[in-house]
Image (cartoon, rainbow, N blue to C red; front, side):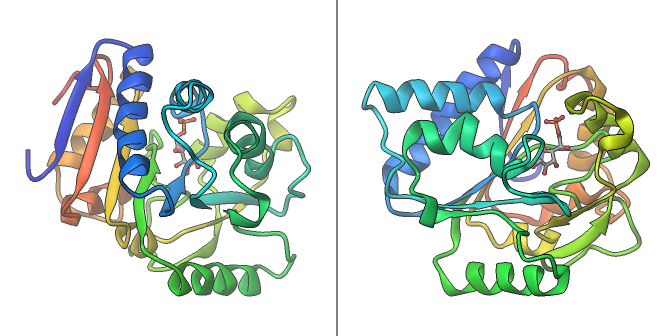
Length: 243
Ligand code: F6R
């Protein structure tokens, strides 16, 4: 399969441990580097494992600069449903990533300014060493939803109905899911030196096959990864069903 490095694991726990190995390896070789983070349910187990490795002193995260893929819009960083909150509670606070080195889109209330500022910040620093990605059941990466074109840079997006439905599990009432988000563009994501794509569960099996082996099309945003030269994919058995 193209240039992908594929790790097939048995279950979610193994997937989390294997992903943590890959990611911590990248951090160990560049302890002051810039790294790209994702939220959602898929990387949660990996973050737990990374926290364990950090607590054991096996890998240090205090020197890294972090850029997250996306954030709901509008949302306050203190909101428990925000991705800022997710990252703080599940990873950054626990491994000592300084506040000044955590970058998550949003916070200004003018989306155009927020998006431009985010791109400027990304462009003014080093390239992202490794970008963590999950995939939506509709093939989205970040919140780049299926569309007619591949969005280049960080932008405001209206979430697809299927994304709103999938993410309702994190909210008390489905109606509370924000309808918009700010996300790095596919072009922004493709700038990362390496990509770590994590995919778990049978619900993702078909779209993963389409993304990795089907035509490269913005209708399946993750298919753009076929054009990237350094993608590591960690899947569990269920997600690998059609590979
Ligand atoms: C999260 C993100 C999304 C998720 C995707 C899968 O920052 O950008 O693309 O990776 O929606 O979500 P889960 O892991 O909850 O299935």
